[in-house]
Image (cartoon, rainbow, N blue to C red; front, side, top):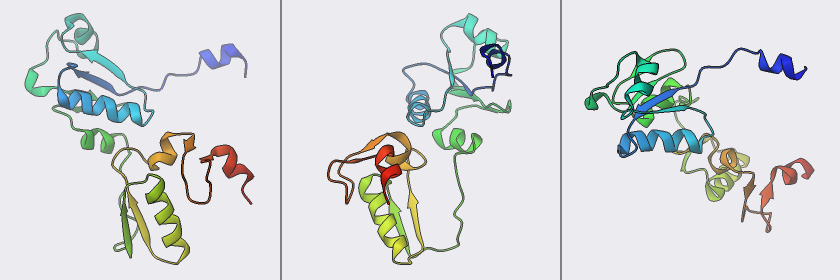
Length: 161
């Protein structure tokens, strides 16, 4: 593929978040999307021209903020992190009706517990609030992982037997 072919690919629409920087709800959604490496477009509701370019109107009622426009075109007024995550397909239903063990948090301890429990045959589910895959999904280095005293990286995993 040449550079010219790359530039002519259709653009994938991004979620658009309209809000004010001081709004806790808008901050929470921006933080969630950023932590998950999910690109989005931010529109400051205090800039009428930017709002008009996105919504066709100069102002948005403060009760509708934060407003999130999903890539499929649907709009979420007074959006929450949960609504945005569901709208972007980042929420998964449990595969089983019941589990032997539920682990809250997918940091190094949660991941180690899940691996050990599953290796013993327990039906295990890990619940993570911040990012799919927990720390393993958001970093290239996990420090203090069991069995890896200097930490574990993608390179370690590729060399593992």
